[in-house]
Amino acid sequence: PQDIALPTPAKAAIGDLAWLAGAWVGTRGAEGATSIEERWSPPLGGAMLGVSRTVSRGRIFAFEYLRIVERDGGLVYIAQPGGNPPTEFVLTTLTTTRAVFDNPRHDYPKRIVYELSAKGDLSATIGFMKGGSPRRFVYTREGK
Image 1 (cartoon, rainbow, N blue to C red):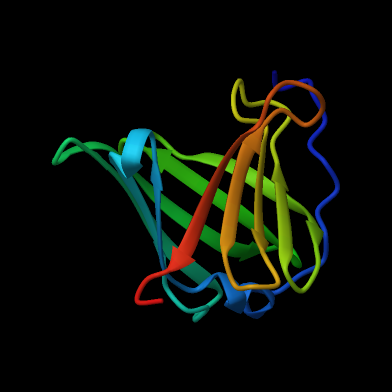
Image 2 (cartoon, helix red, strand yellow):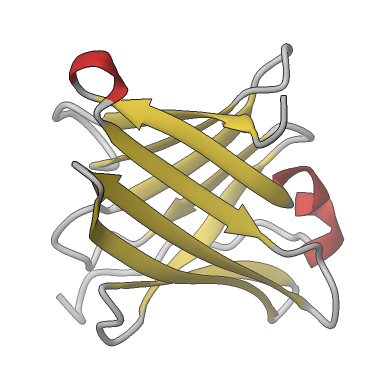
């Protein structure tokens, strides 16, 4: 995989992702049996820190440590599912409500997309850069 070229990073600063900050909650499965949360700190010091937790049947099922950091004029998304070693994704597309992070060297996912809807919901989509069936998670801001 190391011979696969990494994408060209989009120019961005951590403050460009301020819309991602906050506590986001969603459910999946029959009658919302599974709860998924993502919590993102406000942008500060060149980084945002995040954590994700999935709870099913009253027990923690999965967790993930997350970071978005400024690097070389762009942003890098760093995921550590289950506390495993970090995997980095480069920000390739950014609008005022959408951020796309890619890593063509990673087995799965190769792409992570966050998008804020007009009504204020957050979606996180993971999948391949082209093709396949992406997995989409929808969150509402906690307390709404």
